[in-house]
Figure 1 (cartoon, rainbow, N blue to C red):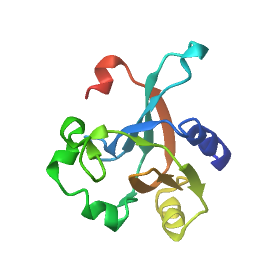
Figure 2 (tube, rainbow, N blue to C red):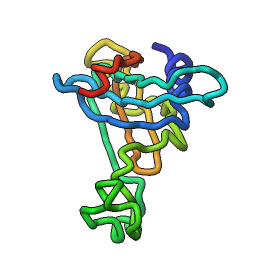
Figure 3 (cartoon, rainbow, N blue to C red):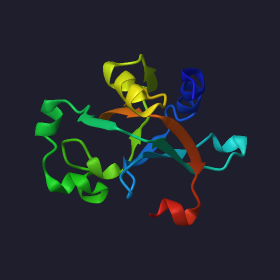
Length: 154
């Protein structure tokens, strides 16, 4: 998979809503589930798309929320939108984060080159930034799959 194709796939998710991310239940691949919407006037139906980062050998997740905001956001009522909406602090309970500023392919790193040599596959490094998290993933391939209603509730 070349960097240009990877960049185009990631660009499609720009400014849409990440609703879930983490390792798959079989623990090899990392998934980012994105709720894709368009202006209703376009007639394009909203959908959930699974970005599957295959053969993910490294996943780093760090907060993008500043410490002073965290300090005001420790109350457990903020993890539920209904109980947190009128409180001061970050309402974690919205249960999504915008893919903004977005995702980008990073230049080859020592780690991605090391994994490429070790496994004989091309490895890539991607940075995904939202208002809540910064994810850095090292993986060999990206696939996108539109989820059915049954699959998105898993």
